[in-house]
Amino acid sequence: MKNQVQLITYVDRITNAGLKELKALLDDELQGLFGGVHLLPFYFPIDGSDAGFDPIDHVQVDSRLGNWDDVKRIGDDYDIMADLIVNHMSAESPEFKDVLKHGKQSAYWDLFLTKDKVFPEGLSEQDQAAIYRPRPGSCFSTYTLADGSTEEFWTTFTRNQIDIDVHSAAGKDYLNRVLARFDHSKVNLIRLDAAGYAIKKPGTSCFMIEESFEFVDKLAKQANELGMTTLAEIHSHHMTQVEIAKRVDMVYDFALPPLILHTLFSQDCQALTHWLEMAPRNCITVLDTHDGIGIIDVGPMDGLRGLLTENQIDNLVETIHGNSKGESLQATGAAASNVDLYQINCTYYDALGQNDLDYLMARAIQFFAPGIPQVYYAGLLAIPNDMDLLNNTHVGRDINRPYLNREKVQQAMQKPVVKALTQLIKLRNSSPAFDGRFTMASAERTLTLSWTAADSQASLTLDFANKDGLIILLDKQGKETQVSLSKLLAQA
Image (cartoon, rainbow, N blue to C red):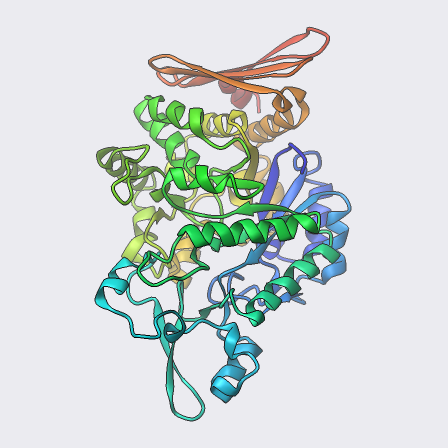
């Protein structure tokens, strides 16, 4: 995996077309910016109830985007990350429809998880209360079979996403087929989507229990044997990320986005530096993704202290709502049909009140923090909250899932903040110092993040009180280059 910035994008939402057009965009307008691309679900269909995360056929490219040969062509020049949707599949899949038609006589009955499989003696109130769920209400959905009987299937996220029994032979075969398809199509990075929910056990939270760690460990090793790198996608207490990092190749640093916001809002970098001292080094860093801005990742959980106090989290959330002029409030929690309540739905750009310098400082921190940075397509182009899309779909996450096209991309790349950001990306990609050793120093309202390799150095010093940052680069010839973030923005 290249130690360069990666792009996160839906194929159709950035191009208004398919995989061939995305390849052209990467090679042309975005040339030199990205070493890899995370292709958000491109399976059939891309427009289900959860924007592709509810596949009817996980091994079929949606024909509106192209085919697996088009995926391979991107893989010829870029690292490709794809989602292995571990926990569930669509209720519209042929397999589940066969279950509804034939019940327990279906060849696919064992593929799906029912309440009875986990709780054969019945679900007690105590068991029910223990289950951790990312949305309110029951984690089961009742379906009527063709013979008139009913069955309660486990649906962690939405009614249309039926949980897989990953312990069954059918479940294992299903995941094996997806991995084999990835291997054949030059997908070399696997994002284990919702893996923390895949294992259910009576009397537990059914989320990131010890058996979950064992499952993720085994799945990661299986992918490694095929030459693929695994990335675990888990929103939880920050120490869970530290622990899971020992089991997989990479984890997300989901604590970083809210901590950077807290630091810029409060001008206090204590919580951020505390986290960077302990954060896993084998991580992918993000500020924004196709999901919202995670809050659970910095908060307390099950009696464990968080990276931020409850008061600090309240202030963080209220500041985001204020900066976005209340738009994030319309897209978050019970205000929209969200599948979770642990995040704030808002673009990162709007979370910072569309302040270009603050946004550039946030990206600079991300790029200098340990890990390989990913930049979401809407964040790359500083696209504001898409209130029209939100009002049309009433899906909270759509506020940060805009539909663009090549012309809109070209227009957005002329914005000063985007021009400055692309310069930061090129700087991050070109300096060999980021392959070296990371160090950090902080004072009351300043923070310095430094990288030192055998023949180069790179440092970022941030002054939160005066709102600026200074990058100093030293190459192997001893030549020093200084880059001020405020000047970089002014000259863009």
